[in-house]
Image (tube, rainbow, N blue to C red; front, top):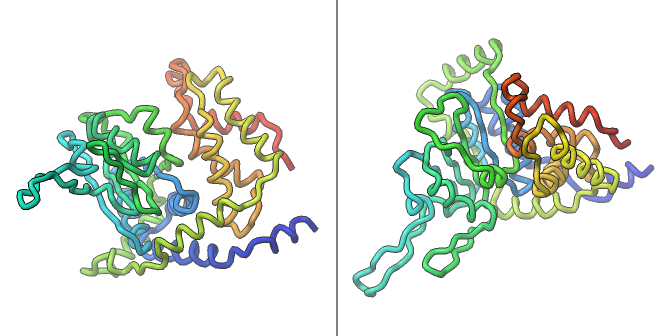
Length: 325
C-alpha cells in the first residue's frame, strides 16, 4: 500500500523519458559499457562530477563526448599536459589598449559539460585550479568572482597503467568527484559488435549521429526533482554505518569523509529516479556505494601488498552490515 502511495506521489515520466533518450543516443555508438553510461547519467542528475579510469581505447573520452553532445549545453574539452598552466584552464586577464584596462578572458572551464582528458598529466597547481570550480561552481581572479552557469559537470579521464609523466591526484581533489568509474575491456562478442558498428558508419563522423535530447533548463529541473526523492531514516542510518565502517576497518588506512555519505545519498536518489521510483531502496545504496567510495579510501600498505582491492574491501564491509528492509 505504501509503495503504491510512493509511486503516485511524484510524476517521473519526464525524467524517465530523458534518461531513456540519453541512453539511446549514447548507445548509437557505444557497445557495452552499460555501467559507465548509467553512472554518467546518474551523476548528471545528481549534480556530481565523474572520474573515468581505464586503459587507452576503451571509449572513455568518446562516451564523455557523446554524453555532452546529447545534452544541448555548452561543451568544452581540456587536454591536460605537463606544461598546462592554471590560466590555460580558468582564463587570464588580458590588457585592452582601447579601454586601457585589463579584461578577464574566460578559459575553457566556463561551460556546462567540461571534459578533462588525462587529468593526471598536468602538475598539481593546474589540477588545483579545478578544485574551487568543481566544489564552489565559481572561480576568483584578481578579487572578482565569476560563477559558472548551471548545470556544471566535469567529466575527467585517466589511464591507470601508464604512470610515467603523471601526477597523482591529491585526496582533496579526488573527493570532489561523485563517482570513480572503472572501465573494463569489452567482451569478445562486444568487440565484434564494435567492429561491425564502425564499419557500417564508414566515413560518417560519429558525433554527428547524436541528437541533443536534453536542454540545460531541463537538466536543472530534473535535478530539483531528484532532490525530492524520498529516503527513509533507516537508509540514512545504513549509509552512516557504511561510511563509518570505512574509518574503523583494519584494511583501510584512510576512511571516507562525511562528503562521501552525502554523495551516496544523492547518488542513490538519482539511481532510484532512473529506476522509475520516487523512493530509495537498499539496492540503490549498494549499487552506488562502490563508485562513490573506491577513490575516497586508502588501503593499508600490507593489504595493498597482498593485492587486496578497494572494491573487494567495500564489498566486504557491505556484506558485514545488516541490510535494512
